[in-house]
Image (cartoon, rainbow, N blue to C red; front, top):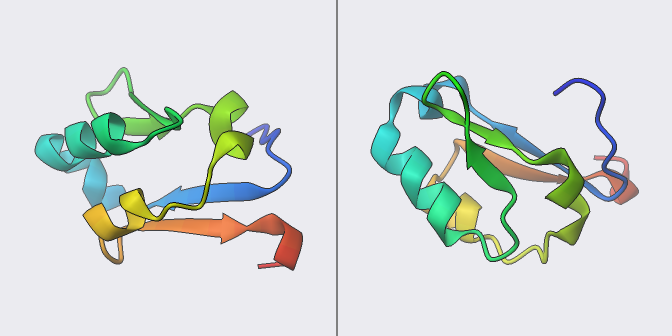
Length: 77
């Protein structure tokens, strides 16, 4: 992610997710605050302006174990 404007979190997405259209669709549809969107290349990307709306519900982490990580920036993680 370049030009990250988020203050509280960063969402790291493993590159292998980009090739899994079903998982991309699941992540986009399941996020209650619309952090994810389809990328021009057919994968997934974060919507930078929505990152700080994250409720830390972990739906994305549970949907893609080991492939999506919510990094809490306020903890120095």
